[in-house]
Image (cartoon, rainbow, N blue to C red; front, side):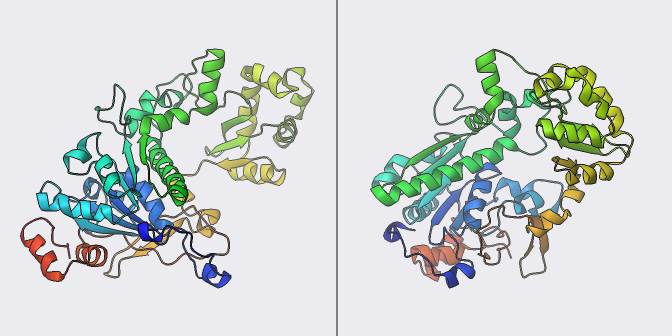
Length: 420
């Protein structure tokens, strides 16, 4: 979907779909991101078939060096979000390096970066100037606080935006200290919103021929994800604290401890589910108590209801309750540790544990691609690239540079020789 290929292609035949045609095949993405938010976004695009050219400094994406786990030179952290990409290692502080990356940008459909505001321009990549030279370019910036506002210059990491957004104040045991989410929601949400925005800009480009400049703020994304909690405050004026194991609106939407010590999550948020839950737990007598007749009643009287339910859950192990509740159609699940989650039969069936092989003796598994297209089997996934692995291929294929010119750039220190 480079500039020359913007008109819609003919719909694929059923046979090509069965072979795993990828919807973003032909789209070229220049990836100037590091760490997590940007690489997560570009991995989604790569999984969907885009050609992603990852431009790295000579030291590599900083996430390559994050402890504690490594496969050869690269960290497990890096390997988790960089499959299906190509790596070019360029010194962007060198004039020839800036020129090289600019040439790649002019041959790309999308440029995505997560520098602090203003840094890209200092590196010779000004979005306004590039869009004048390449009107179809979609430029996506991911930053902690956006390209404007009083915080625009401040550094930000995932936990900073979790804290500032208010989301962290909701997370933790009820009455206890706030804690960060166990997964990096600030980074991952920004990556997903970036992909959504890029897709929207590309769709509009098919009508206008022009790209857009996209401004994704990690803090904006986290605030948007407050959803009903934000509405509760803005409408009712309440300031909720840590939510613990419960839900603000449903007494029986909660975590309970079973007799074997395993936590069980139950989401019985209808009257029918509550009635079946009470019968399965052996506390059907509670159904006759007017304090628990409706969801509103149960919510108002949760302080007397929940101790009775807690005691009932302690009488049997988690597997017992999960089996009984599932048989009645009550939403339920054990709180899995990662070993149990990543060996769960549903997770494995959906191919959410993805094996990767670099062909050089390195075999790993990572979390898989959640996007599935009915009837299509995607092509094999590529192992995350080593630093500078694709220097020659990218510059020859995209810029049509010959081997002598590429070798001269390596000799001059503009390109870092690929790591064997």
